[in-house]
Picture 1 (cartoon, rainbow, N blue to C red):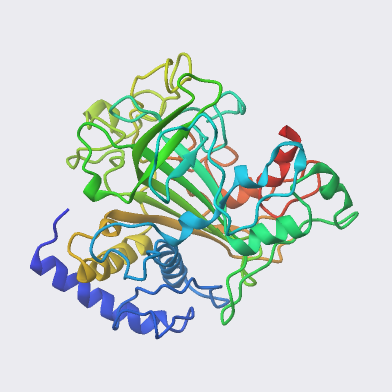
Picture 2 (picture 1 turned 120 degrees about the horizontal axis):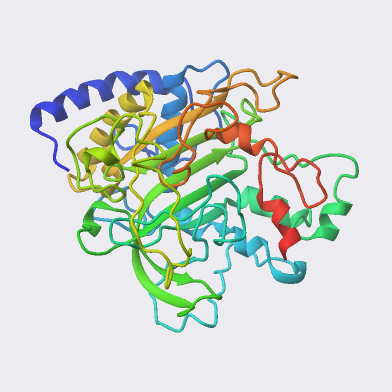
Length: 426
């Protein structure tokens, strides 16, 4: 993607205004801030109570930048792509060990499955999920199904947690049924919360990856090598280059006990329904019938029919259109942060990512709405809630309204995380 000098100058002007306002809403670090820009390696802990939508979206972008900061000591996007901070976080598969054994220490590398014999570089991902909820067939719920790109390849997913959340789970033995039964009898889980002037609390990630194939330009994506591990399939493990196409970031904070829900996508993912032009897209052929207003369920966003199997099943691409466009404040922040990233490196891959929106609790003490009356009421990522987009109550995707129902294996509330319910499957 290229930006003309005129557009870049305008973007930098917007950036300058936003930078002046940003400091009052979340902490930044002088030793990692890049000049007067918004880019910092410091993960913010919280948003000041009463912050408006613009400040909340700044928090989302600051979080995306911080967790995608390179581990090699350079600046995000400078000199090309690299291994990001979040890539050392622990996955749900590290927590959900068979028979409920003690999970490995947070800083210990995750074990490589025996079936994955190909030699791979450091930082290689181990991708076991072919839907955002886990393995295909494990969750036969409405709106769940594989996302298949224009090359006929299945999108792969991973779920990760940061060190405070991981250590809380391990220290309280919440990784086993017995440990959950013994935890806080009669009570519920309460993960650590970040504060404005303190350290971050619990953070969860969901990441969507597409296999780099014909027509893809890896230089436009944050990429990694990955073992695609599906033990019930053949071959059970393949080593492929993948590119990040989606990311959910969920923060537990003092001012947002129902969590802050931020979601990002790659700019090349999908067209907006009713729009024209653009492309090529990773998840649409761009045809008018697949992006028209009202195409949902007829010309676009249709759950694939047939056998769901990345190796031997249906390979027909899913034609996806975005039903709800990015929020207005997200668009403003996208312009500002893209300008900041391009100022560091004109070829920064992270300038190709967009904040779709941020869901934030507007009334944290509302007794009639345990999700905290989230605003906006609906939020979806085209790579993760592909078949649940829209603005229909009790049908369309809403991060907080979905996750407040999460429980442990014994049915007690698990503080918006579904990970703890899945020990029942081990």
